Length: 159
Length: 166
Image 1 (tube, chains in turn orange, purple):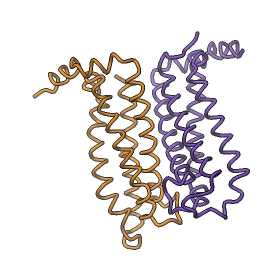
Image 2: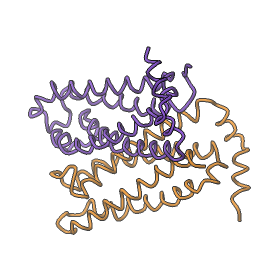
Image 3: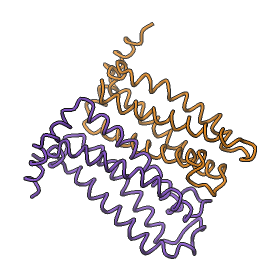
Image 4: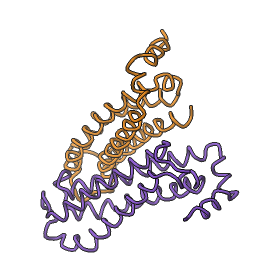
């Protein structure tokens, strides 16, 4: 079962055509998506740096994680809200982009990892988790979440 | 104005080589975006604390001291890639209002930062752990948030042909 007919239907749809016809729509969506990215990056990094043993070293890990969480969740919602229109703007281009598919595959993995393993390790009593486990979790988090915006950027640049 | 200088750089063999390089622009821009995420992301976390919006349990002096090296790393990365991106096609950016707005906002943001550090921050011991810091601290945080968001936004908008003059 090929997605191509669905993609072609989306490309021709009223909503996609309307979005493309407005000169400001895609720019505004892109800008808000980028601002959301920066907030996601900050709220992830402040915890990941701490997991790696750097950053806010004197603060309890669980406290840093809890403080960052509402911003992470809010910014991720913002990215979803702007990401869907971005896909609807040029469905065919995304369909034919290997980077789009890689991004869509890594994104759920990153989300699941962040809200299960990473969350558990970040909120756990620090004495009960070996520091190498924390460092590994921090590294995996950075690796996964770096892949996503790189792929996103490459959809536009290498197609 | 600066036009002759920009045209001179634009015609240099190294500038031409950079903009004709197959993956040059892509690599530079992607690295620029990642450096921006590191820099602006941590600056936002700090500004949220200054403004009293977030990270409220962390002392301000801790956030300042611990995040500064990483913010600097991000800034250095963004600046190097930014200078190279510009160097490759100076005449493309010369006529873009959004590009110059971005530079102006960066300068203002850095002035805000300097003022905060040289003046306001001196009294940090008095409000280090305040959930709601004094007004001038909150203002510094909010101004910084607005300006850096502006830098990111105008940076993105330079990609479009809007407000571009030959």
